[in-house]
Amino acid sequence: MRSLARPGGNITGVFFQQLELTTKRLQLVKDAFPDMQAAVVFWDHLSEDQWHAAKEIAPTLGLRLVGTELREQPYDYEVALAQAPSDHRGNLFAMTSPFFFRDRARLADFTLRHRMLSMFAFRE
Image 1 (cartoon, rainbow, N blue to C red):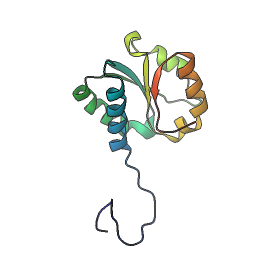
Image 2: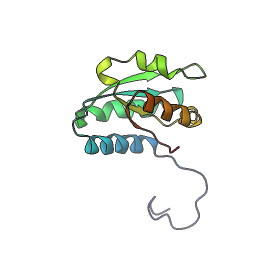
Image 3: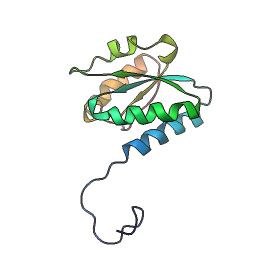
Image 4: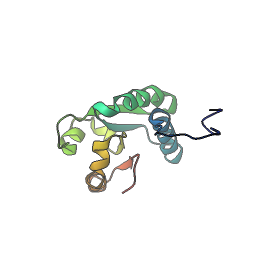
């Protein structure tokens, strides 16, 4: 393989760059909403590395993040949001996880109901 951009030859399998994409998603939202200062991050055991990447890049973007780990199925997003400081509750980032993907319609309804700016790694 010559490079990821120009592999040359056959490639099989799946490659996920979730840590890099997490950083890019935070940058995109901050560029679009430069006045944003704080946000809640929903993460689970499958997306813990993404949460750590988000925490690391956030200060360079002028963001304060508070993470809420969701553990028990089905995830209770109301309880998770209630655990966050009130000044963080207007903005939500959901990390990439099969469980968040499964709940994508619920998460979309949740953020609309709470009138939150949100960023997800999937489309509904």
